[in-house]
Amino acid sequence: MSSDKLDVAFLGLGGMGSAIAHNILKNGFKLIVWNRTASKAKELVDAGAKSASSPKEAAQNADVIVSCLFNEKAVFESVNGENGLLAGARKDSIHINIATISPMAAKELAELHKKHGVHYIAGPVLGRPDVAASGKLRTFLGGSKSAVERCRPVVQCYTLEDGIVEVGEDCAHANVLKLSANYTLVTCIDLFGQVYALNEKWNVPSNLTKKILDIIIPNPALQAYSENVQTRNYKNEGGFALRGGLKDVNMMISAGEEVGVPLPYANVIHDHITTALAHGYEDKDWAVLAEAARLAAGIKEKTGSE
Image (tube, rainbow, N blue to C red; front, side, top):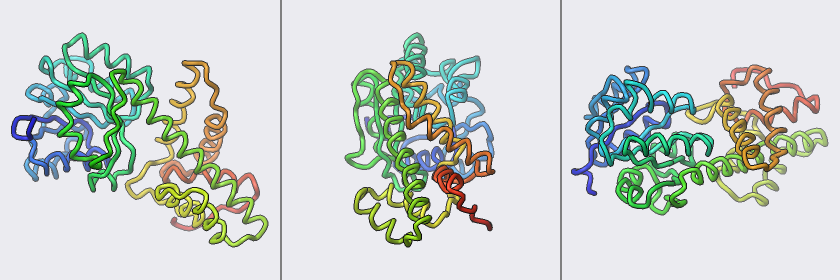
């Protein structure tokens, strides 16, 4: 379908959602938006989008509904009830859920949508809001192949040209892969904290530590996190806050328990995030969890505004 034939609804205008919605609008799609705090829709409305008072209203005339909400609770609240999107969505419309949720929740949502004749597509993304703004996210898509093809032009607005990963008909697989990616990422961040703490106690210059880590892990995103840990700069400039990281780690543990797979690193990281939260870091970028290793080693907290 071309953009002039698709009406798109977008639910959830946080940092990530707003960036994605702007890209959809810029690509010529008719867009109606909803956010719990209505004032966050103003910039998009000024740019040409329409505003809805509820998910139901947003979904009523939409071919594709995209939601980008914080957690499972927010997703289910936007889907269910007299003002939920399923109360307004047309038969054969498509709902793409960008949120990072558990695979168990994805299966439940797929069944709910099926009962209403609506296609559910799990569409979690890899990347931060600044990457979303540049239209260079990577997106996992799980669900009906025909529905995936129909909504592909919308997804491509915020995704790298070769960044769509189709995972098949089982939508839960998209969420398993997203959690797996985050598990790998957060494990590396936690490892960085331990390595920097060890080398600092041995008075090894941090630039040498980073150089070695960059050689071993030549991934730009992980190298950026390594620099955050090196400099102890955890300002959350549109990134992923520590509290959100705890949510994701809890989902990793639950997903493992569901199928009898122990994830010991996830439990350790959970404890390190809890330590960081206890030190008042909840609004920092989630890379601040690496500070738990320094705290355990008796390295003083960095003071100041950073």
